[in-house]
Amino acid sequence: MNRWEGLDEFVAVAECGQFTAAAERLGLSSSQVSRQIARLEERLHTRLFYRTTRKVALTEAGQTFLQHCQRLQDAREEALNAIGDLGSEPKGLLRMTCAVAYGERFIVPLVTQFMARNSRLSVEIELSNRTLDLVQDGFDIAIRLGRLQDSRMLATRLAPRRMYLCASSEYLQRYGRPHSLSELARHNCLIGSSDMWIFQLEGREASQRVNGNWRCNSGQAVLDAALAGLGLCQLPDYYVLEHLRSGALVSLLDNHQPPNTAVWALYPQQRHLSPKVRQLIDALRYGLAQRPEYA
Image (cartoon, rainbow, N blue to C red; front, side, top):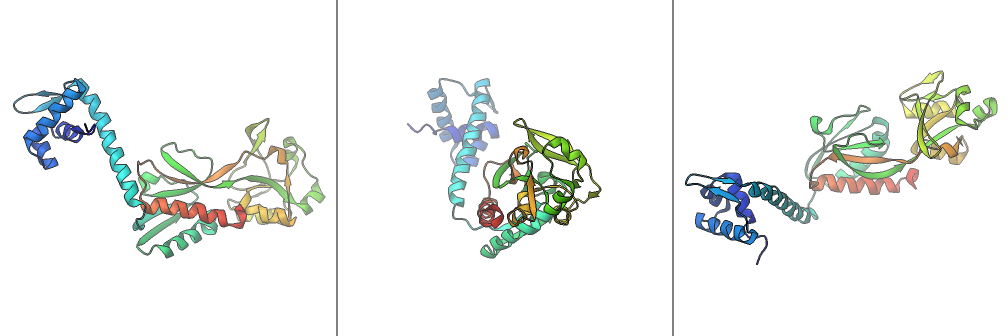
């Protein structure tokens, strides 16, 4: 016996409130629908509907069973769509957002390459350092850096992200090297978008407010100031690794380096990702892995 038998008929009757309307929806006769419901109730040893001459109403058992059956239908449809989309070409409009500097340097070039391979796709990218609402503003995907705050969204990790405290050799020769977090107070700290810097202290993440005579909400500007010997900076790996390797910058307080964060693709909760979103996420993950900053 097919255990799915009668489930579609049951859901149709429950949602339509009539056997006739349910039969029309399914393209069956009313007698066929009625027989399937009767067999289903017999298998379950439970009455699912109260029947009158004009309409039917769900019993308490029927209400509970309906919720499960609707989820089963959704899961079945999702499975069929997922298989059907495996070879589907991305098409239509895809709207995405990302922070300005990271987007310009890393994301937009990869999206451009992705579009060159998918001519039926249109993309709108909004680069903004504001945290935009994906649902309210109609975005399919957002690229977010660091730790995630919005629990309403689903996320896929695209790349690692490590923060470094560092300074130029010139600055350290003039002002000395800090050996503890408490010594940061006597150093000039180059402040970006926040004066709260994140560290690791006794195995836990800790925040510390820093002070300095220079501030700019641009990571590249903070980097330039650090290279010029103006002070200490705390920046993500993709800004500083090249300069750490060359010796232009020196990594400091490595034992207090904060726990790894990440680069994320964030998207609204839904049971099945469209081919354009799923394939773009795959392309971004692969493309970032090829970058020398993430080697």
